[in-house]
Image (cartoon, rainbow, N blue to C red; front, side, top):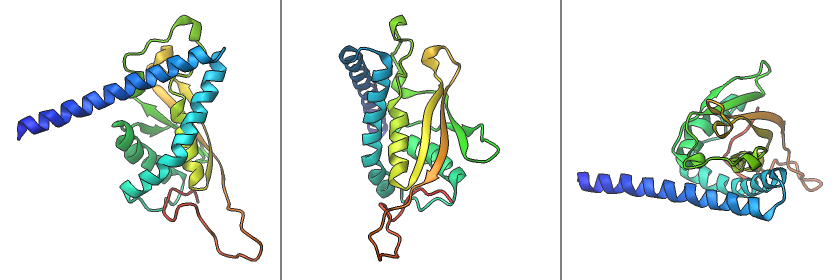
Length: 193
């Protein structure tokens, strides 16, 4: 039985390392394809957004999470369920704004940056910007517009990686004239009050 447990752990570690190395190859290729870091950052965000738009369906199906009541509950679900499910980490939720519409996710360990050192000529590169796009895309599919950006990054010498999220607005579906029912993209999802 312990051999199977060790194999499962080894397999998980290999999958994690393969993902990290594959992501690194993707970022390297983008750096070769685009002239400046700002354009690479935009492409990573765009790719992440497209992933998030599709990933939310898998998340809702696998997690059986019901509709969140407010942005605080949404933050907890993102940190404790989504990050754990897809990256194997649980960031802490901190630095709430007084209005309760903005918070930080603190990642003590960002698995995307294992084995990574940024070269000096890529000082403006936001290496893990894919994560911002994933969060933005997934939340948009459950009618929540958010602004997501990196505030700190261990690759730039900061002690932690900090992703800052700000609630912008609740997205209402455009309904055909005469239709008075609310139609939601996902019948179960994350929702702001």
